[in-house]
Amino acid sequence: MSLETQSAVVRALAARGYNAERKAVTLLAGAADPAAAVEAVAESTDDDALRVTVGDVRRVLDADPAPDPPGVGTDSSPTSVSTPTEIDSNQPTTSGPPAETGGSSETTSGTATAASGTTSGASGAANAAAAGSAGERSPQHAEITGDITGRSTGTGEYRQFVTTFRDRYERLSKLLGGRVNHRPASAIQSMGGGSDAEMIGLVNDIRSTASGHWLIELEDTTGTFPALVMKDRDIADLVDDLLLDECIAVQGTLADDGGIMFVDSLFFPDVPRTFRPSTADRHVQAALISDVHVGSQEFMADAWNRFADWLHTEEAEHVEYLLIAGDMVEGVGVYPEQDKELDIVDIFDQYEAFSEHLKAVPGDMEIVMIPGNHDAVRLAEPQPGFDEELRSIMSPHDARITGNPSTVTIEGVSVLMYHGVSLDEVIAELPDDKASYDEPHKAMYQLLKKRHVAPQYGGKMRLAPETKDYLVIDDVPDVFHTGHVHKLGWGKYHNVLAVNSGCWQAQTAFQKKVNIDPDVAHAPIVDLDTLDMTVRKFA
Image (cartoon, rainbow, N blue to C red):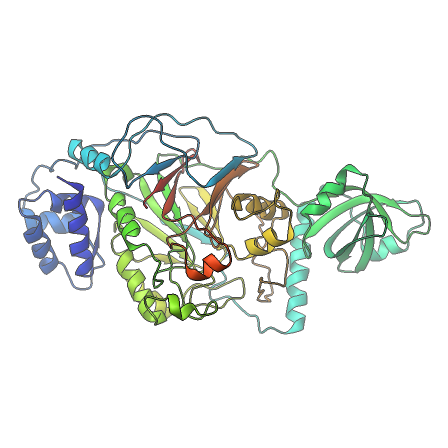
């Protein structure tokens, strides 16, 4: 059977309000008259059903299950790759090593080996399906932690901001407690000159002195104390990594008058270099995407359709999870003159259209979504998941909807999902070699180092005060997934796979004005049993 027939089946079912299991699509495409089979299945399936199953199709095609058509019933595994590579799923099949992606990548530990040759493309998927397709997907129910949805207590009062930062300090100081023998600021103030001192605090101020040294004011729950980093010390380079409001630890010696600490060592909460990620105990994959932006004139519907079609092929049989890191729709009034760039002007209609596109995704996949800054939720972070009205609009696929950020555990692998608004702040504040839009994963490394997804308050970063700081990274994730900046980048930081997954929106007039050149229609595919990654391109 052709891939075009399978695609036609998916479209026909979606038009009738159904998504479908991949094997059900293959059975329908292999019928003598696929169009008639689709019509019969739609008529016999309950109106309340969300998806068409293999059983629904078999009941229509034959009371007794007939032999599987070509492409159903056998198992086949794709070529394993260990270095993230790009496979163009919109091009004819070629053999040999796939070309590398235009996005950026880097590994700081656990360096991956080179990829072996593989085949790709729509025709390759169709040929593989004709030769024999594998069994049904059986994803586990995702476990979600760190979700603010339904738990928000913030009213915006000043005292609640104090509570949030106090909680941040207490939790991050525990991570730093093994590095230094912390003394409170009030105790250090009473120590004699020349004494050795160690302190954990939030960065309250950073400024350079007339001599070119760096003065860092640290604050804990008892007060503030100044720490001086001399420009000729090796640790002076670490000052470039600092952001206001993050938590650090310092060791040093007090000046003769005891009024300032000369810093000898500086520590971040960081990810331990000995960290070893968890992996799945079977070969199963997850697709990581973000920034779909349905409703924009530049939403790439054709590329999305190719992605959804590919998910129904044998090549994608092990892709059982789809994790979407925010900005499902373009939104309304997000930036100046956005209305001139909208294809759909009503926000609810945008979500209706997104839901229709989601129907093309196989019905036997587990989907988890978090909101972003273009979505119809509060802008202040942490963001709760969508309200009941929007959830009902997006119900056909029964997707899991959680807050931003959240940690999603699938097959024993923890994935920290964060939309990524704070990346703008990190990139603006740090040197280009530490964080840039061309290499967004390096900015993600900084967040892992600071163990906080949005350490600096103010600027573009809006913070909702809560009794708990939901933005602290208490437990090291196995995978860190973000979006927002519309750039593709990945790498490993102390064995944590960091992925910024690009977008599905071509360059808008506004993006052109602010010099954003997006990486469009890429789907990073992570092997959960090895944490190796392949990037597929659909445009």
